[in-house]
Length: 346
Image 1 (cartoon, one colour):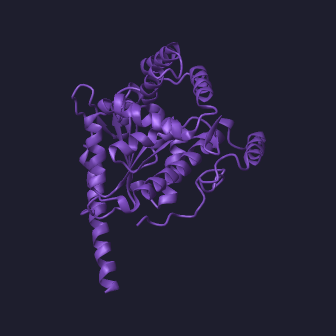
Image 2 (image 1 turned 180 degrees about the vertical axis):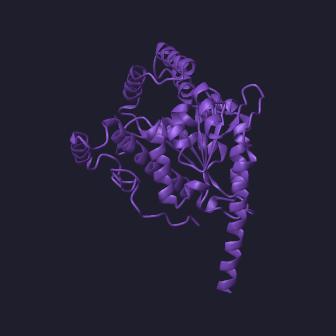
Image 3 (image 1 turned 60 degrees about the vertical axis):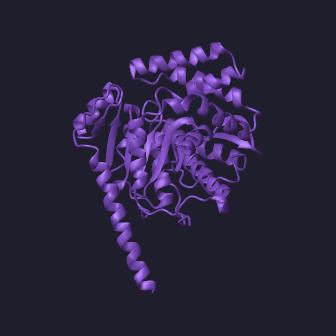
C-alpha cells in the first residue's frame, strides 16, 4: 500500500502552485506567468533565478511522484515481486545526483549519442554538447551562455514530439549505452539504502522522463528531473521553471520530502559537484562522490564523507557506515513501531 502523502503545499515562495501533476502545465499557464511577473517586480522579493528554481523544483517533485505512482499502477496485480522482509523506513530517504555520481559522464550526452545514431539530430550538435560538458568538467563552473544554448537546442528537438516517444527512446538508449556506465560503488550505496527500507531518488538536470528510465532500470524509487511542459501528451517546447540544477534541486528535494513525510535530518544526499551544495546542505548526511575540487574542499571543511570510485580510492573522513547506520536504525525503529501497531490491533 502506498502511504497517503501530505497535502501540505510545497516549500518555498510559490508553494503548491502546480497542484497535482495530472492536469499538466497548459492549464493556468497565463496565471503562472502573471504570478511570476508580480513576484519578480517586487524589489524585496526573490530574484528571477530563485523563482524559476522554485518552479522547476516543485514541478519536478510533482512529476516524479506522478511517474512513480503510474509505475506502481502499471505493476498492479501482475507484480509477482516477493514480499519485503525488511520493514519500510517511512521517514528516511537517499537522493543521488546522476552525472559522474551514479553514471560515468553526462547522462544527457549519452542519450544524445543514441538520438544522433537514430538521426534525430546532427552529429555536430552532439560534438557541441560534448565539448560544453568537457569545459564544465575542466572548469567546474556552469557557463550560462552554454546552458542557454543547450536548453534552446534541446527544447527545439522535443517540441511537438509525444512524451511517450522520449520515454521509449530512453529505454532503448539506456540498454545500449548507459547500463555499462553505472558506477558499481554508487549503485551499491543505493542498494544499501533500499535494503534498509528507504526510498531512493535520483536528482538530475536530465529530463524527468529519461531520469525515470534510469531509476526504473536500477530498481530505485523514482527520479527528480527537469520538467518540459506538455499538453495532451505532446511537448510544447517550453520548460516549467528552468533546468533542474543548483537551487532547483534543493527545492525539489524539500518539496518531495514534504509530500512524502520525510525527515530531512534522517536523509542522505550524494553528489560529485559543488553546484549541488544547496541539496547536500539540506540533509542530515551529505556524501561527496567522485567530487570536483571545490566540492572536495567543502566536504573536508564540513566533515562530509568522501568516496572516490574513479581510481579505487576510498577517502572517507567520517565513513560511509554513518549514512547506512542511520538507515539501519530507522529500519529497526520502523519494525518496532509496526509490531506495536499489530499488538494494539489484536
